[in-house]
Image (cartoon, rainbow, N blue to C red; front, side, top):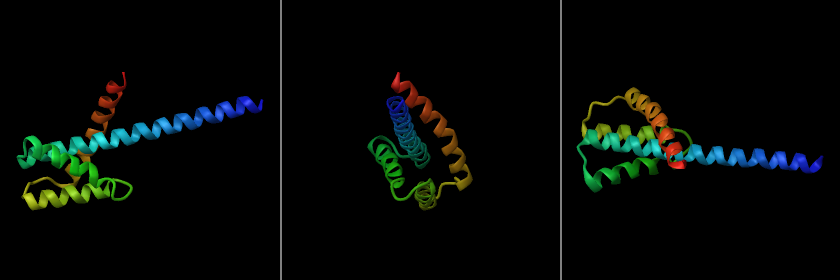
Length: 109
Protein backbone atom coordinates (compact mmCIF):
# COMPACT_ATOMS: atom_id res chain seq x y z
CA UNK A 1 0.00 0.00 0.00
CA UNK A 2 2.87 2.38 0.77
CA UNK A 3 4.31 1.73 -2.69
CA UNK A 4 1.02 2.58 -4.40
CA UNK A 5 0.75 5.80 -2.35
CA UNK A 6 4.31 6.74 -3.32
CA UNK A 7 3.58 5.96 -6.97
CA UNK A 8 0.43 8.06 -6.81
CA UNK A 9 2.28 10.96 -5.15
CA UNK A 10 5.03 10.78 -7.76
CA UNK A 11 2.40 10.78 -10.48
CA UNK A 12 0.79 13.92 -9.07
CA UNK A 13 4.19 15.59 -8.70
CA UNK A 14 5.06 14.77 -12.31
CA UNK A 15 1.72 16.09 -13.56
CA UNK A 16 2.20 19.28 -11.55
CA UNK A 17 5.71 19.72 -12.99
CA UNK A 18 4.45 19.18 -16.53
CA UNK A 19 1.55 21.62 -16.01
CA UNK A 20 3.96 24.26 -14.68
CA UNK A 21 6.30 23.74 -17.61
CA UNK A 22 3.41 24.03 -20.07
CA UNK A 23 2.19 27.23 -18.41
CA UNK A 24 5.71 28.70 -18.56
CA UNK A 25 5.97 27.91 -22.28
CA UNK A 26 2.50 29.29 -23.01
CA UNK A 27 3.24 32.53 -21.14
CA UNK A 28 6.55 33.01 -22.93
CA UNK A 29 4.98 32.31 -26.33
CA UNK A 30 2.07 34.64 -25.52
CA UNK A 31 4.49 37.42 -24.58
CA UNK A 32 6.50 36.87 -27.77
CA UNK A 33 3.31 37.04 -29.83
CA UNK A 34 2.35 40.26 -28.03
CA UNK A 35 5.79 41.68 -28.79
CA UNK A 36 5.47 40.74 -32.46
CA UNK A 37 2.00 42.31 -32.63
CA UNK A 38 3.25 45.53 -31.06
CA UNK A 39 6.38 45.53 -33.23
CA UNK A 40 4.03 45.50 -36.23
CA UNK A 41 2.13 48.44 -34.71
CA UNK A 42 5.46 50.27 -34.32
CA UNK A 43 6.47 49.53 -37.91
CA UNK A 44 9.43 47.36 -36.90
CA UNK A 45 10.66 44.68 -39.29
CA UNK A 46 13.27 41.94 -39.47
CA UNK A 47 15.74 41.71 -36.62
CA UNK A 48 14.31 44.81 -34.91
CA UNK A 49 10.91 43.12 -34.78
CA UNK A 50 12.39 39.95 -33.27
CA UNK A 51 14.53 41.92 -30.82
CA UNK A 52 11.51 43.86 -29.60
CA UNK A 53 9.50 40.65 -29.15
CA UNK A 54 12.39 39.23 -27.11
CA UNK A 55 12.41 42.33 -24.91
CA UNK A 56 8.73 41.79 -24.11
CA UNK A 57 9.45 38.18 -23.13
CA UNK A 58 12.38 39.34 -20.95
CA UNK A 59 10.20 41.94 -19.22
CA UNK A 60 8.08 39.16 -17.73
CA UNK A 61 10.99 37.97 -15.60
CA UNK A 62 10.93 41.15 -13.49
CA UNK A 63 8.18 40.05 -11.10
CA UNK A 64 5.29 37.57 -10.97
CA UNK A 65 2.16 38.32 -12.95
CA UNK A 66 1.56 40.37 -16.07
CA UNK A 67 2.05 43.85 -14.59
CA UNK A 68 5.72 44.00 -15.60
CA UNK A 69 4.87 43.16 -19.21
CA UNK A 70 1.97 45.63 -19.25
CA UNK A 71 4.14 48.41 -17.79
CA UNK A 72 6.89 47.80 -20.35
CA UNK A 73 4.66 47.71 -23.41
CA UNK A 74 2.56 50.67 -22.28
CA UNK A 75 5.74 52.74 -21.81
CA UNK A 76 6.81 51.69 -25.31
CA UNK A 77 3.39 52.51 -26.74
CA UNK A 78 3.57 55.94 -25.10
CA UNK A 79 7.06 56.65 -26.40
CA UNK A 80 6.07 55.62 -29.94
CA UNK A 81 2.87 57.67 -29.85
CA UNK A 82 0.76 54.68 -30.87
CA UNK A 83 -2.92 54.61 -29.93
CA UNK A 84 -3.20 51.35 -28.02
CA UNK A 85 -4.87 51.34 -24.62
CA UNK A 86 -3.98 49.18 -21.65
CA UNK A 87 -7.41 47.54 -21.97
CA UNK A 88 -6.58 46.61 -25.57
CA UNK A 89 -3.23 45.15 -24.50
CA UNK A 90 -4.86 43.11 -21.74
CA UNK A 91 -7.52 41.85 -24.17
CA UNK A 92 -4.81 40.96 -26.68
CA UNK A 93 -2.91 39.07 -23.96
CA UNK A 94 -6.00 36.94 -23.36
CA UNK A 95 -6.44 36.23 -27.06
CA UNK A 96 -2.76 35.45 -27.54
CA UNK A 97 -2.73 33.11 -24.54
CA UNK A 98 -5.19 30.88 -26.39
CA UNK A 99 -3.17 31.13 -29.60
CA UNK A 100 0.03 30.34 -27.72
CA UNK A 101 -1.48 27.32 -26.00
CA UNK A 102 -2.76 25.97 -29.31
CA UNK A 103 0.67 26.47 -30.89
CA UNK A 104 2.50 24.79 -28.00
CA UNK A 105 0.12 21.83 -28.05
CA UNK A 106 0.66 21.47 -31.80
CA UNK A 107 4.44 21.61 -31.28
CA UNK A 108 4.17 18.79 -28.74
CA UNK A 109 2.47 16.42 -31.21
